Image (cartoon, rainbow, N blue to C red; front, side):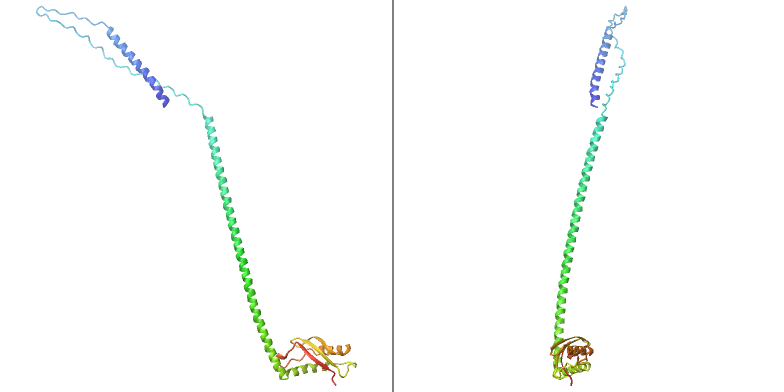
Length: 266
């Protein structure tokens, strides 16, 4: 548009100059033509002065149409396809760089979020582990306290049972029942005793017999016994042959380690 407006001004000036020259030539041509002469008419009776007739006006000519302005063909645009291609490539590289940077930023953001998520999970696991360990320790402590309480109660019950049993046993002893129980055991052993000829008439032998609750003999220990080995073997054989030993008249007289004083029966 700027180029066309610049070309229009000189074209208009040239057209105007041609019009002025053409008009001047027409006017000069009209003045150069001779003026037609008309003879005067004379009459006898009247002399009239005929004024000089003015020249006829020049014929009116139609103005010639103004020539159309010459429109110059626009100069061909320079071939800038290579520049456009280069700019397009630059723009594409710029957009690709922006997209790559955005991708890297998103990746870093995701990695940071994933790291924070894993840290939270680890913290939750550690918290739960600590809570579970604390609960386990509390359970162990409560169980130990409960076991200790039960143990004290059981020991107290056992002590009380032992005290009650010993009280009952002493009462039975005072009543002569222990002597009767001991005599029952000795009589059964004597029935199974077969002393050798080496046994003296004044033989005395103290033994401790271990027995189960059922009366089964578990072992024998010689405490004071001045006899030979043959006599000891015969006494030991008689004790084991007497198993199970008689039951006590009352349960509280039972003694797992009963003391017996054996002599030679006459």
